[in-house]
Image (cartoon, rainbow, N blue to C red; front, side, top):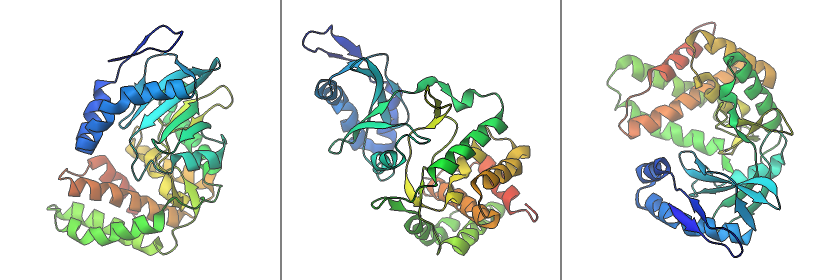
Length: 306
């Protein structure tokens, strides 16, 4: 807990959530601990620099602290996170979208990766919709907006990511003891290999699940927290298949999203299998078992006629 005092203002007490500190230590080790230790000073400096006033308790995800603030009495959100390969392109993507389907970027400090964002309604995530099919259609419509733009220069490229995954696959397969699981992962790599030489050039969000979609006064739903890259929109479908998983709905969700986005179904299937490969490689290399529901999604997508 840190107390910030500003001239002419009542001191504020801001908690650094323990869960955020724990996740930073888990995923980033010493670098994560250093980031958490520096957060109080960093928050204070940006409250002063951008003339902001805290306006509620801080929120957090796995990697970022988000502080509700007021800027000239206008609600906004101060986002502080540790820079990594996935988050590095976030300001560039948000500027490219300029509020069309995504939260609007108000200011950005490139040295610390700190961002000032428009304030959305954090109490109304898309996950609060009772109907999962309605949520999937919302995500599909947002993706249709977001992926309509060509990716600007400077972002990670799906072609490079795909090739790296394929290079890592042989060693990973040798570490899978179960033959059925090994076959599923090998099938995912084979599907990815079929499309890897045409990786696409659209601006992708990469992580559009129903807790990364918030309600807003200016639009029913807007995307937050992109991990952007340049590539094929078929690589975007996995989170909505995995979200609030329903085995019987897997193919309906896949068909609905490919229809809304106007995607070639075979290519979208291959890129979606590539997403399972990406998740599988992370799990295998970190010594974790593969998640059964993810294997089930792959099985349903690779079944003849799917």
